[in-house]
Image: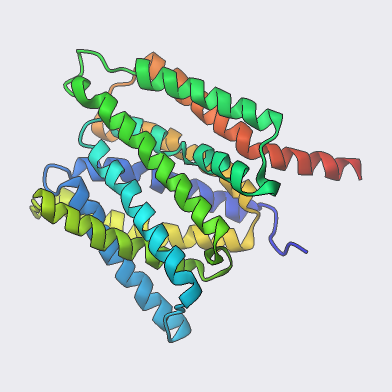
Length: 309
């Protein structure tokens, strides 16, 4: 019997706060880019948060819950997580935070497609395939007609940045598949987070050194951004998410997470004064509608089944 609870007011309120935090994180990275390169930001925040997670594991369990059978999948999710945020960091050098927020959160579609072919009970229904189609159309509209005009100083590179956002979403989806298909799905969620953060710190830190992206200037903006990213986003919000996942139905939480791109767009406009084109807004709405259709279908079926009892 599933011990997880349906959503209540507390969980919904926490999810709104988490979505705001996740939506603002791209703005935080981009706002400090002049002082700390985005790649170095992601590496440093992963290292700081990873150390905090390690301390938390030792305090809670008095040992690191290492398992030999989880080591291989742990290394893999660390690699995939690193590649995801490499594309986020590099993409933000070329495109807007609003665009990155939308394209990054196509991840559930990539995860759903992968699980469809790998896990029999996760096969997509006709309605869900229609959601995939709507998302695909939305990506085309937002990607090709989403505001890459000569009026933008980033116009020549925005397509590349948007493409990196899509790749980041794809690697996030792959990470979800690996966790779902490995022993990590039944292991310590905190340990899984540690694998991801440690991998990102080592790999992205090394990549930042190799590519010379190591500029670091202590300014009020850079310090505030790094504290927010390390403590609030990468440590506190991820742990809160895992805590909710253990107590509430994941599908219900997943539906609420689709507020994140909306908050990301709003944050980009408010804090960075990013311009928005009508075509991009239409594409973003189609993407979110498609993802919601894919993820909410199972919830709708469960609701109908309960009504028939």
